[in-house]
Image 1 (cartoon, rainbow, N blue to C red):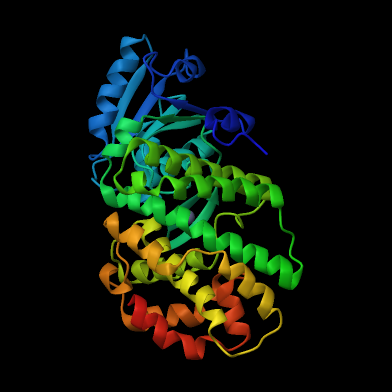
Image 2: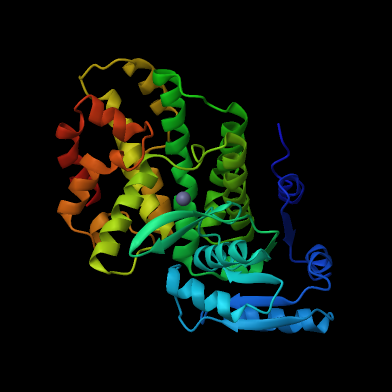
Length: 379
Ligand SMILES: [Zn+2]
């Protein structure tokens, strides 16, 4: 069993310097960027952390220029990536000060230009910090582009705890989702013989358990809780590296989120936080697993799937956690139509060729009877 609690040691195994704020002001990071021209990339929201950070770096003799994107909430699309690439063109290393979007922009643009990048995390809001791919919007479609992993992740719990509550809630949604995707994966291994990587799964499961143990602190955005949440979010990336795919981090709940994302893009509406949509999908997945034991329908392997489902938390508990962090627990709250949600329930399994609880429902015609109930509970 890996010592997942020492996230700094675990990260170094994957070539990433995860470093907590200390009196020494990130000595390993400063050593890594010594002699390089550094660009500190931020937006209008995160400039309040980025500007003093750049200043402090310069105080330590490090060349560091600030580059701010004009938006409060930039979108990772072609236009913003081009602006960021131009603004940081002179640098050898780009440090993003932000969470999902800025990290994605930095990873992608520096990958293309052959530079290194890192991130000073401003919210524990999603699990993409350690991933080597980047979700981007190109020509109005959400796609996943190859990028590289960050070289440094700088963690200041004071900053993470001060993030807007809903961002921590989104991170909690992305972690609660692991209950479902790990079950989707295990179920597929039992029913279809799909390869199941026990090491990746157990690494994720243990981090998830630690996070759940600390949930009362997460719900108060307390340091212990947010630290456990952040560690689980980082470990999610490593679990994917071990598995060689995104199985340990993404299942039906993510397919629901992607399905809704396309709807927002089609309508030209701002997309809600990844973890907020994934959190909603998690409630649906948990209920779909839960109701299997109540339905009379028989299908091949039902007994073992019900056994797996019994190890899951109740959807009501997950909803109470999300609600306490200011996250929506009904799809109507994020501005999608009931028709879209119904369409999602019947069709999101097509998004990826990956067996999940959604595929199970589709294969055995179980959604016809479940859809109204799920809509009643979560729309
Ligand atoms: Zn996710």
